[in-house]
Image (tube, rainbow, N blue to C red; front, side, top):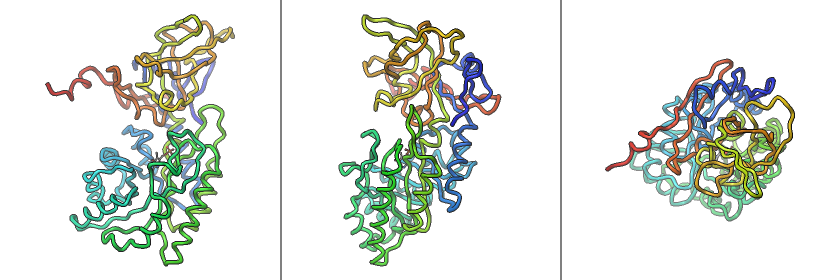
Length: 416
Ligand SMILES: *Cc1c(COP(=O)(O)O)cnc(C)c1O
């Protein structure tokens, strides 16, 4: 569900005509709907309200400051994967006790920052990291809560690049190793090994991989209980999928029911780390058609957004719906186009074989849907193209929440 709708052929973001925003903000730009975001946040909270979990938004999916402030105001915590994500979360007002720190390559500097800050928990990814955390704690004379990220070795049935729980995945401890670490936890004097964490992948549109993973974690914790080891926290990660095309992801209630039924048996308190499901459909990317090009066998629409603005299609063949911002009055014939960006790479294709009106022309605007998660955050300066602007709509008003980069921004970091 989102508030990007057509009225008499014109695309509106809430009550604002997208065309009117494009008169003020140069394309390409990301466009968010505040009320869509809030709707998703509240639906997620409400699905879990029975047990009131700690919901840590995955900053890596979208870390615009304005968006973070909205999430914080709605009571969310933050799931961070780098030093700057932690710094930004703090600056946006997230309480340290609602911040979790994830990742398989945390540096000593990052860990020290997290420990000094007194965050809720570090989710550790390997044994050496545990030793390092213990050493830093000793130096700082502090303790910290730690969960082991375990790999339940299941297939989440999503794109291989966003599956994180296959046996060969780089993430997490295998269960056997984790078992022995929990049993010998006392060797880490400064760690409180109070939790267990999983994150099985992203854009998961079937409930069964979640069930499979939860069953494995439950069995694992049951075995540990025999040794008197109980968990205070279970972190179920994120990963719930959204509709890009015609997927039918589990609805929030169904997802919540499954997670809650297991989490009660695994630990006292539940932590969740949703990203995509919160922001994915709250943002679109607006781009302008530069050229219509016909080659001997194909028709191309060349637009000013490309893989530098939205990497997902090039990175993992992701599908995004593409529509005209101002749709044509007359119903005319539709033709098949590839929609491509301006980057000097053959892989710079945003959408393949899409049917759009045959009389589409340069200067027309296109909207690329479901671009709110893993959109802006993955954009790059490749070909020295500036990072795009971001705009948010609230009712009948819109506001720039990040300007596009200019040439000076790009040159500023160089030392000559
Ligand atoms: C990426 C990530 C998330 C968020 O995943 P979504 O699919 O966006 O919900 C949560 N937890 C961890 C550890 C992650 O790496």
